Image (cartoon, rainbow, N blue to C red; front, side, top):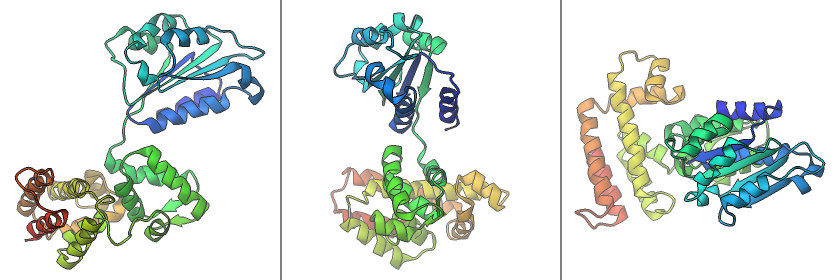
Length: 333
């Protein structure tokens, strides 16, 4: 995120590159930078003649170069934005000659989503010398709750740690999807307020009582009744609660518990850092670790692997409900 802020700060300060090659798996940041350039680099009255948006499916590299070599009309520069540029993957290396000698009065922007350039080839090497190359990488899932907190903080809104975790579990690590849902909450909640699990349930439809966070909590506290209630709900709402997601979240949870047993310093700060969790949850992990010594955790991780395979239809053909019930029985036995 710091590199993005620096990139935008440079543009605001007049430090503008002739080419911006925005690539990578995370489309959110690519769109953020491209949209900023599209909205702010030219005055409104300059855009009609000096700003053009092209699409990789519809143009060739030669078309892009032709547009880029034009001179601006009654403006200091022109802006050429190529969206869906990943569709030019087979011919993208033809851009090398232009990159070596770009038009000084043109700002050429490539939105090369879900892919990256081969760093061994000439184009990447040339871009590295004369352009801004931004590699937009996916954020690890365990970093999503803090990303949500920071996003809302920028809107003068806070969110409880539990609510951030529930949102991250439900929405995954697609930042565009997350940002879209958070912007809805911003409108509902308003500046200076706090997002809670109740607000999420009311406005996004994620149950505050029946989710993977509550499931891992029930398992950790050996609350059999609550665990079965939750997985029964999951089995009836499979679209929102796919079995593979539950397995993944429980695996991360018990891996963290295993790590906790290896940490000698049990202070909140040390545990929070070692596990990569919000300090708010440290006391809960410490309490649960008493119910799950290392040997038991090893057995749980083995069980999770077995049921991950079963969920893919290998060696078993049972209903989703039975799969959930068997999983909980074998984890808690």
